[in-house]
Length: 107
Length: 316
Image: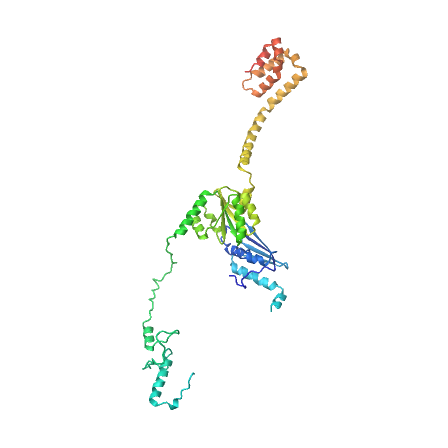
C-alpha cells in the first residue's frame, strides 16, 4: 500500500470536504477514501490542507469535494465508486498540477 | 565445449556407442524425433545421479507410464452440478469471538452512552491524549472487531447501528451520558468523526447527539413542565377570583374613603355585609379580606353592639 506511486501527495490541494451519511449502505468507499486521505502520511505532505468531514443524516449520496490551490474543484460522488478509483482520480489531477520544474530538476 | 572430440580418429565400435550415448542423452527429457522409436539404451554414464539440483529428466518409459496413469477427475453430470449458491456450513465460533461477544453484550447492558466514532488513523500520541482526556470524565475507549460487532448487533435490538461499523471504528462508552464533554474533546481531534450514538437505549445521529447535549438538565426540564401545568390552573383560579377580588377591593376603598365608623350605623351597608358573610359558597379569600380589614376596629364594633357586625366578624 505504501509504495511511492500509491502514496497520497496533497501538495496542490487546498481543501477536502467529505460528506456522507453513515447509516446508508453505500458509504464504504467514501469512508476508506477518508481514512487514506486523513492519515498522518497524507496530511504530512501538506500541513495547510484542511480535511473536513461532515456527517449527515438525510439519506443523501456521499460526496467528496476537493478544492485545489489554483481554484479548480473536483467533485466525486462516491456512491458507485471504489476508494481506489477516487484516489487515482485525485492523484492524476495532483500530478498534472504539479509544477513541471520539479520533475525537470529531479532528472 | 570443454574438450574437442576428434570423431575421425575414433574407432568404429567406440563411435557407435559414443553416438548412441549422445543421442540417448539428448533424448532424455526431450521429445522423440521419430514417432515409435524408443531408445534402446539408457545412458547411465553421462546422465546425472539420482538426486540432483536441477530437474532430472525422466526415462522416457517412465514419462509414458506417468502420462498414461494421470488422474482425471470425473466430471459430474449437468443435472448434478451446483446451480444454487453454495451454503457455507455454520462453523463453530471460536472462543475468542464468543468472549468478545459477551464483552460487547456487557457493554451494552451497563453503559448508558455508547458513541461510534470513525478514526482516520490517529497516531499513538494523539490517541493517548484523547484517552486521557476522556478518562477524566469517565468515558472509556473500546476497540472491537467489526465482524464481532456486526454479528452481535444483528441479533440485538440495536440492529440499525450495523451499517456504522465499516472501516476503522472506535467505541466511546460511559455509564453516565456525558455528551458535552465528549463533543468538546472530539472537536480538538479532527480525525475522529462522530457518526452515531446509543444514549439510554435511543439511537442518535450526529445532529441528534449535538441537540441532546444542548438540552438542559433533567431537574430544570421537570421544573419547566410543572410550572407550565400549574400556570394553566393558576390562571383559571385567578380568573374565577377576579370578580370577587375586584368587589372586595372596591368595598375596601369605599370604606377607607367614607371612614368606617360613619358607615357602621347605616343599615344597608351592614345588611349587605351580613349577606356577604352568609353566602355558602363564598370564597374564603373575600371573607378573609373583609375580616382583615375590619379586625382592628372590632373593639369599637362591640361597643356599638351591632349584631350584623359581630356576625360579620365571627368566622363561619
